[in-house]
Length: 352
Ligand code: NAD
Ligand code: DAU
Image 1: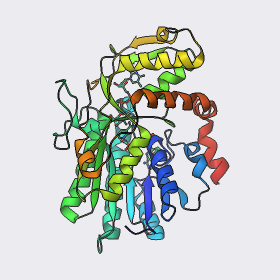
Image 2 (image 1 turned 180 degrees about the vertical axis):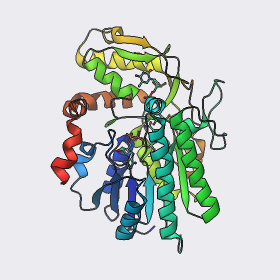
Image 3 (image 1 turned 60 degrees about the vertical axis):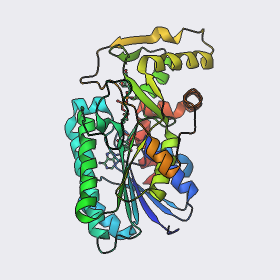
Image 4 (image 1 turned 180 degrees about the horizontal axis):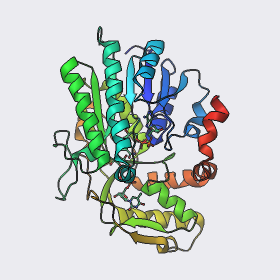
């Protein structure tokens, strides 16, 4: 692999993207890492404060749907690789505003594919377009022994997962039709630092801290397979460097939890950390109206990436969750800047 690669990472100011950017900037000092992000409500440059002055890092504010702009940056920086994470990512928002998901997740992905294909078409060697996707494209499991494999048929059930499924199909179509060198991964639910507090785990931590009700959808029976975000970033690194062109890799934690059990565990960890009486935080649990079309269960079979590329999760869930709680308690300013909206001034104050 060329040690002087110029890599475009999209969505690097978001939750997972910021971990991927940090990993690549610090592990590969010879690469130039370009982080392209529109800074929607989910983009937060405070996530990258620790590496923002690194000599091999450049932030680019822009929209993946803007074809002219994407062409301009390809022509200026001559990227060799793309790791594409930019997306609208929250299922509840996709139910209230599906068009934003069609625009970014479908049109944005096809815009990137098109520009990359046109720039690289005379010589695809040493080029790679990596599309980061989700297990939600496979739909919802009802048989408790079933797991998602790379060969499982797509059956997306929410506007979010339908938009991600459409983008996955376009990525494979560009490989099949034009020979664009692609790799793709479908990962389960991530957790860890810098997770936007609209998602279950950071929302629960934040609400317990502030003695606010913890909303559990339906009866809390839905099951998710949780993976520590730094393990996901490591898997992306491994696939980007060692994955086979045209292949898909499932990534997961082999770590299924019913929402209610997970919330109970978080309540107990928080009681302990905050010096509250055991059982105190559980009193905040409030069962609320279920999410429309709520997928019952996701579970990833991550055998392929283990046997072919040697990746496996590194952390036990209890350990990762405790680490995550410690991080949120130690980073009150990060959380407060989000709740106050101050995080959205960071670009103006530090980059303009
Ligand atoms: P996120 O919502 O935290 O971050 C998304 C980032 O994309 C933000 O920084 C946002 O500003 C940026 N963005 C949005 N629209 C853009 C546009 N039009 N142009 C440029 N930038 C734009 O998302 P996340 O949870 O970090 O997820 C990242 C990727 O990983 C997504 O593609 C998601 O589908 C996938 N994924 C997420 C999970 C998870 O558990 N969070 C699991 C599997 C896969
Ligand atoms: O599976 C991977 C997916 O995981 C990613 O592709 C998505 O981008 C990511 O947002 C995540 O989707 P989920 O819908 O599973 O995550 P969320 O944190 O929103 O919800 C987790 C579970 O908790 C889900 O069953 C809904 C439930 N929930 C969620 C919230 C926000 C609640 O019970 N209460 C809540 O307040």
